Image (cartoon, rainbow over all chains, first blue to last red; front, side):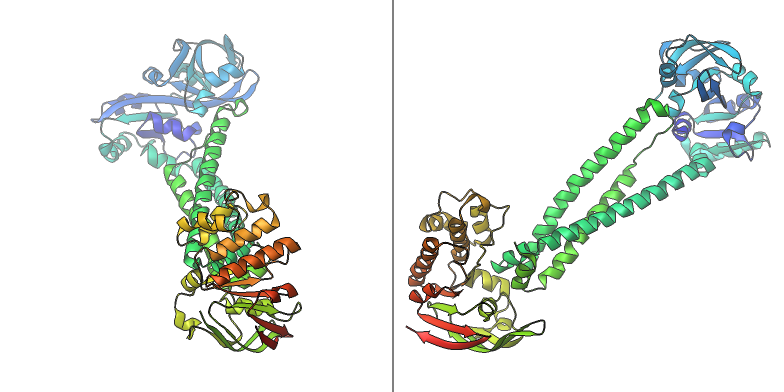
Length: 318
Length: 211
């Protein structure tokens, strides 16, 4: 998504001070050259971020970029754009059925090439040179993406950039993404929805395992009648649960990754919807779901272990 | 193993199903407990075999109460076998696996299967064999650890006459080798095989016959 694009391309992001959204940010492109002079700065590129209708598509992300940023786009065909030219992301190129030209704000642009990006947000967009984008959106730059030689000095460089001009605000890309309202809203919403779904799933797992153990009371009684200890039987049940939980987790993880992959490549979404399952999330889900499945088995099994074998057989049948 | 039960009483909810039972099971004997349905046979058998705690009273095994025996599961596994009316083999295990689940020494399984005439059925599941064969597998499971005593609750209840007599013959044969049997049944034919017949009625021992 957008956050992934920002993370990939810069260590520091510079915007207009106090702006709520990068799309509304308006900064002076000449400051980029000054930033490049700061010791420790490897590169600074300027971007204009905008959105406009393109042919039949009602809204498409437009990126005006400085020449030094073209390297970020891997060309699948053609060449980087000159004046009055654009390159298209592979997704929008497919959606518009391989156009030779496109119309943006009543102005025709020649499609000089097609680029491919792993970031769906970018792959569904249009890239042009900074001056053409400046004419379209009436600004010289929206943001600067600054890459550093040494990430350890990022805080010091942020301070130096902020000291250059009172109208700009520099942040490390990570802290910018963390504080960016839209990302926060999306993240919080997805966290809440995900947590609810997960909680319901967990309750389902616990209920299911409890029912399974209850259904097997008779079997539990038979095992005890032939002299197996409750401890051995509970261990056996927990081992079975663990295997089921591991298989279920593997299937669920595979399905989730598959669905995310499908969404990312679905033409309908033009790459705008993208998600990720972090290692921390995977580990947390694994621990919680396996623990709850084991608890859902252990508690009814422990209860059953305190009942006479004959009563278990009579209650549970076999 | 000598089993003594004193003043056994048992309740299901508020219903008294055993009402002061005193009996003694002698080592290596073949004891039949007979009586109509609801007379308390199954409850008595369950208590004697440690599968059910009595509401009141005490059972002693060679003079020791259950509390004194310590690990009751271990005691049950090494000393007691149980045959149910409905075989109660675990359906997802083969006959051999069912027996192995109880076995302390799995090398004894094959000879026992041969002895019971089901050596070719070890790899089958319980729903792939006849009722008589299922019951033989259940008997094998009860006998695999060469227990001192085997309890059987209506073991022929679901079998035809031929298979029922076959089961009694098996019990008699193993009883002759030193294993005690206590069989609860309403089938009068059991009396032909038993050394001691305990007749129950309405939760009490009505009569004890010794042969």
